[in-house]
Picture 1 (cartoon, rainbow, N blue to C red):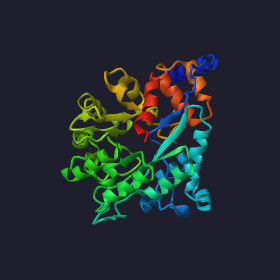
Picture 2 (picture 1 turned 180 degrees about the horizontal axis):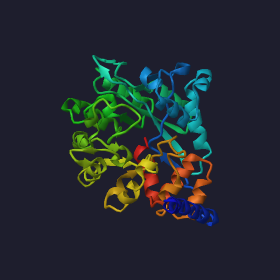
Picture 3 (picture 1 turned 180 degrees about the vertical axis):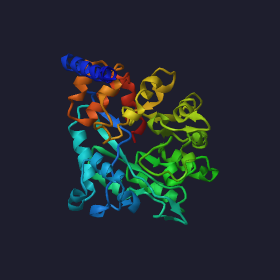
Picture 4 (picture 1 turned 60 degrees about the horizontal axis):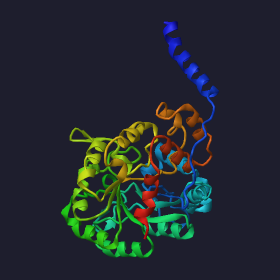
Length: 356
């Protein structure tokens, strides 16, 4: 029995020794002339400093929320003193210090809307357009992403206001906001997005941070209606994770790319432990790489959620060591995704698509 137990321990010690003795690789990563645009970063808060952010009490009191703030690199006390703008300041500083990323989209998150008002009992997190627009105006490296629920009676005016303030996209989180993208009542909304040239960033697949109101609303196939109406749709995270009608969510999404030239997918979060392998496999498939957009999912680039070592042997140990020692989270994310095979064109495409 002791011998059996010693085998995995010896294996780990051998791997550690090999890792320590492996020399660091020299990465061929020339910084881009203009810098990359991150289509999918995150900010948030607790409602401090007049931000208008709302967090449902159940979420605020949960263990998840403590991790959420830690991921953002702030504490409740710090936000109470300096306001939620502190989070945007941290992201802006990361961009300033990055060799590769020049700007990042910070999308708002509308609440669940019923009877033309936010249903606070059903809304887990609300990040107002006013807050994200103000942060984008304050920090030149941040881009305003709006979020407008289609059940608002004044949705058109809100979209017009968002475009006037420089919004580069609109974000929906269907399973959390209680929106069915396949509902034909939204056709006028889609027509307006096309008119205003605003892409729709949509969270598809299942996730664990929030409690989903209706999980079925994350089905990628529900994006067919806006796509048929001419909307440029960006589906998040390659459609990982979860399944619908027995089919993996990402397979469902990737299968749609050939039929819908306006469908894109971002690669935010794809270096995380729970998504290892998805990116490498997707890059081997035709069409997919041509529809990828760079997104970091900032600030979710911390150990143990993310480590380049998780991607060995797809990434050699020398490269793993070099990436691990990079101080800037955004640069580590870029370097790891390039090491996994993501080409320069993917990183450039976000900036071209969102240029206004």
